[in-house]
Length: 357
Image (cartoon, rainbow, N blue to C red; front, side, top):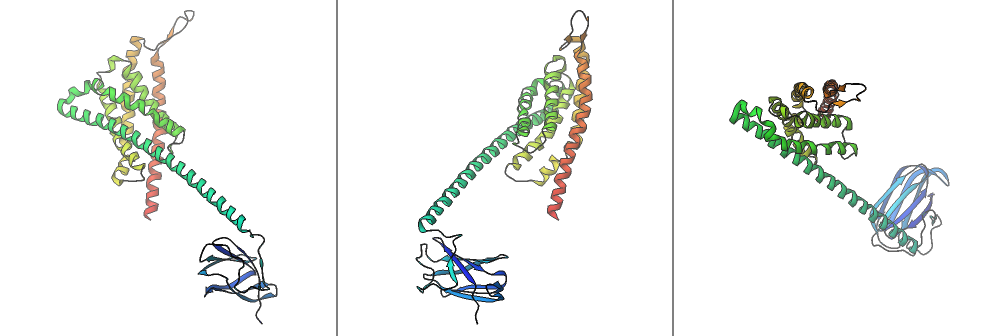
């Protein structure tokens, strides 16, 4: 004798939902043939552990594709209607099969189902609007970062090419007028570089705030305090070496970031961006240290930035003491940034090796 499980049904405008009360169902076979759904499975139902089966001939056409999902307590079946609409009953025969009952957990009247559709549509529209807003923000952020990196790349490229051409044409004489020919563009680029600290602080880019702050503040200290405030430093060859080493690093760093805005990579540029700093960064710090040391006698002589104490004390604090402290901080900053950049390089190429494997 064929054993029939309890089956509960509900509908929406496009789907029929069936819930078969069968615990731990196995060997489930569900299909739709000539508008008749046939079900067979083994499990624990109303008559204990047995094989159960049933068939339903639908009142209107349905699509032959049927999906089902089995849980520990039941089997859920979804059938798609051939045409969108609301059915007066489920089966072709007017008399409802004894094993079939409404699924009141999912049951909705036609008006309630239409309201559900409207709510889903409104939710979908809200999600689309939020995604559109998020996409607009991402596009705005990408555009901003690309333009920033492009401007910096053009600025430092101009500096590097200009200094290289002048060195080739004028030789050693070009070392003594670097500040007068290059400083305006360098001032612009280094003032603009403060944006990188803000980007890191507000999460626009994923990088450490402290290493970025060390580099930007350090360079601006050398540029504005050591070179900018002392006219005697303008004609020193050390200005050439500081500017040249700074620009040599940046002409590889900024185009790498430009490509990164569009998730694009050029392997040669990636290698240069994560490698060229190894010799150039310590040399740049060394050149900055030389500039600081050369400026100390000038600050002592000119008394510039000297802190004058009250007459009762009868002395003053020379700015050169600040520079001695700064030299110590430069060494500390070198180790911090070198360690940070080395970790970045190690992480980058380790990730690439994993992807290759």
